[in-house]
Length: 271
Image 1 (cartoon, rainbow, N blue to C red):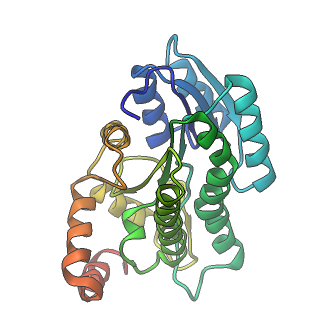
Image 2: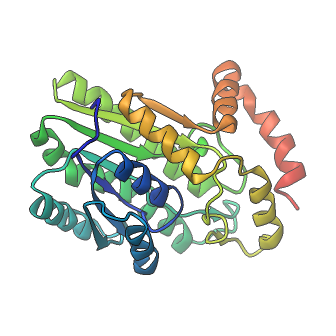
């Protein structure tokens, strides 16, 4: 996919943050957009800011498997085809393994992993039929390394990475004209930390302030990096200098990265 003009792009979580910035970046390149979010007010703001772009919005809860498959059919009916799917919607949880509830664990997995998996599977036949398709699944730097108090988020994002990398290989082996990319953002200045659920022992204010200090990259810069990665058909799209640094440490040290994370966490997470 060397050119995005008139391509039909699906973006979940488009009501704010990276999703909103992606919608703007794709619209600037001439994409026709199917944008979804559970936050209808935020989604309407995104659409309004896109001026004369060819855009249609949909309320979608990505934790609902049947709703995702119905959404895929509706988008194809509305646009005639689908070329690009960006499974971006996500949530966060900060809690230790001992204190997090089953409900919170399921909440993260249903949205951050199953939302991506079902979104991919629902749209994949349509991407294949287009003859020029691309799946983009958003993982995280927490899909590269394990971090204390992020076990549920780690579980989801590692799963997204494995699922996506396997799919890319399958598409190549089956000679399908569908590219596949996995995105690993570092700290992005979005509202995900403020909307995150916290364990009972967490100092929510301190945790959120800590995240804000580490958020190096704007959503707009993240979106541009992702779109450029799509056009280059990159298998792994690293977003932000911190993502590049974490990826390098993981590659160089293997599992020996863990003492570094432990020292960092003792100063910044166990507060």
